Image (cartoon, rainbow, N blue to C red; front, side, top):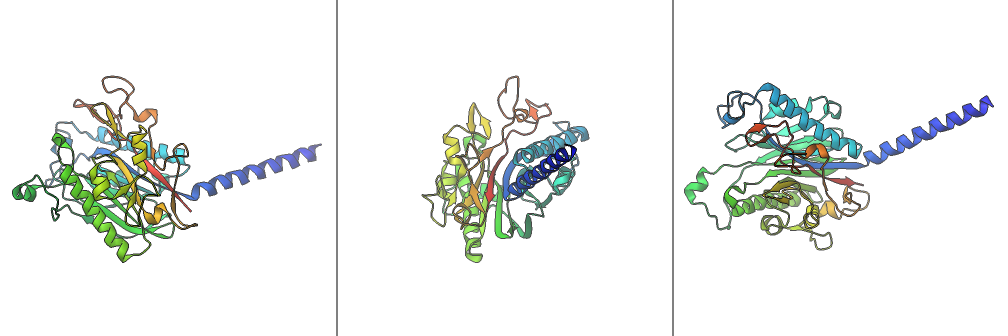
Amino acid sequence: MKRLIYILLALFVLSSASACGQKKKAAEQIAVVGFYNVENLFDTLDDPNRDDAEFLPDGANKWTPDKYRRKLNNIARAIRAMATENGQFHAILGLAEVENDRVLKDLVACEDLAKAGFKYVHHEGSDGRGIDCALLYRPDRFKVLASESIPYDFNSNIAFEYTKAEQAAFSTRDVLMVRGKLDGEPFAVYVAHLPSRRGDKGMDLRARGAEIIYDHAMALMDKYPGIKIAVMGDMNDDPVDASMTDYLHARETLAEMTPKEFFSPFMAMLKAGYGSMEYRGTWEIFDQILVNDNIARAPAGTLQIRPLEQGRYYGRVFKPDFLIQQSGRYKGTPFRTFSNGEFIDGYSDHLPTFVYLSK
C-alpha cells in the first residue's frame, strides 16, 4: 500500500513539474510589447538646462525625495502587475515623460522590477521641460544594435499655423528609435510623445510628428528588408484621427493593410468603448501601439501580433482597480500623481497598453 502511495505521489510531482514547464514554455513564446506614459517622472535635482523648477523640493509641487520614491515604487508596481497578468515581464516597454537617465536607473532598481533585469535606452531630447521618451528592455529577449533620437522639424508640405518665428522657437519631445533583434528577429521600435492638445490645437503639429515617424520607418524598411517595426507612444490623438490615419497610415484591420501601412489594434478598441485616459468626461486612447505589415501578417514561425483582449482585440488597456481613482471628484479616472495641485500618491493620468507578439 505504501509503495502505491509513493508511486502516486511521484507521478503527481512529475505531472505538476511537467505542467509548470509547459506553462513556462508557453509564456516564453510570447513577447509582451508595451507602452506607458508615466506622467512627469522627475527626480528632485535641479537641471539648469531645463525648466524643471516645478519638480524641486522648493518648487510648486514640493517634490521631495519621499514623493519621488513613492512615485517610482508606484510605477514599478504597475509594471510588475502587468508581468503577473502576462506570466512574464515585458520584452520591450516604451515610456514617456521621463526626465533623464537617473530616474530610469532608479526605476529599474525598484524591488518590484529588480528580477526583470531591465536595461534601458534614453537620449536627452529637445523638450524645454526636459521630459523624454525611453525604452526599457530585457536583454535576454531584445539585443540593441543601434538607437537614435529623432528631433522634430517643420520640413513638410503641411500648412502650419505657426509662423516661421514661432517654428524656430518651438520645442517638443524627440522620437526615440531603437533597432535590434527581438527573439533573434530584426526589430525596430519607435517611442513617441507627440505635441499636446493644449488649447485644443496642434493637429498640424501632431500630423507632422506622425509624418516624421512614418518617413523614417519607411527608410528603415528599405534599408533592412523584412525588419519588423512597432510604433508606440502618447500620440495626443486617438487612433481614428488624421495624424494616425493619414500621416502614419494606420489601418483598422489586417485585411485592408498594404505593405507600407501600419496595423492599429486600438482603433477597433476605441470604437468599442475602451480608453487609456480620460479628458473632459470622454475616454480616449492616446496611448497606442501600431505594427508594420512584417509583424501584422508575418510568415508562420516568426513573430506576429496575436489577439489577447477577449480573444478578439489585438491590444490591451491595463486597467486594474488600483490604477483607477476610487473616490472624489475624479472617481473612475486614472489615479494620477497630483489632483488640483495636491499630491495624492497616484500612478499616472494614463493607463498602460500592450500587445502580444508570438511565433
